[in-house]
Length: 353
Image (cartoon, rainbow, N blue to C red; front, side):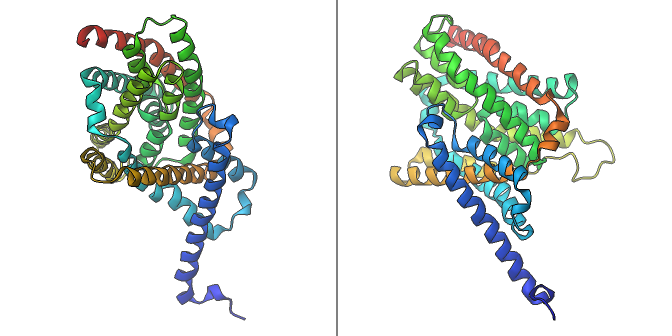
């Protein structure tokens, strides 16, 4: 007797149903992750739902990888790729040109110097010193330099790299960003770092990985430092777009002669232009505040779905193959963010006031 799948006319329907089931499964999983991240014990650590999502997704994907029907794989993949691009674009509603102008040239200069130097050091250490592949080195450097997991996701989407490489980069962000969030305020409040309120805001916003980690650290210093640090951090977030375009141009020009057009080339990040457009929308205050807040909440959930799906596609065996090199690269970058970030902050304050 013929089965339903033997009828070619039914194949698209079954494929669409499987994709939708996969997306729904990721959404329900992300909803549980959001509730888990809201628990006081986790929320007090400044760990965002995005981080909880990739960890929970990876645990599920490795322990129960056969528990999901094969037809759902397309939906999971869409959540980790297509939905991700849309969510990164809508991240632009969190940034405005007015906020960036509040900290003036000091905040912009610190952000530019920290992002540029961290990317260059991370790429050099990863590829030259530890012989990591280009994608892993770039993802690790981007997570440290720009905006943590969100930057890793944006670069992963543009590079179309393997999920386990993103997981390693996110692991670095989690470890060193969390350590910085706890240790920096202690050092500032104890007077070990010679920073006034403005300097503390510039340093915290310019060097800590995740937005949530910046807020968590700065809130233990002062409300004024929190305000400055958040704006500086969002300036770094805005640099995601030009960095993606510059890296894309560099990779395209570094193709070997005779190499296929599609190889060794970063995909044109259309979502980056969407990000910029929404920054302008937010700056013009076209949308009511309540609408912007609702969209940002949905966007956080969409990013959580993307991270969860990315975790589901990650395999521990692939991570083990890379060894500790990616983590050591992240550690070197964190040392640079402490020492180099302090030097940049003090230098900019001295020059620009």
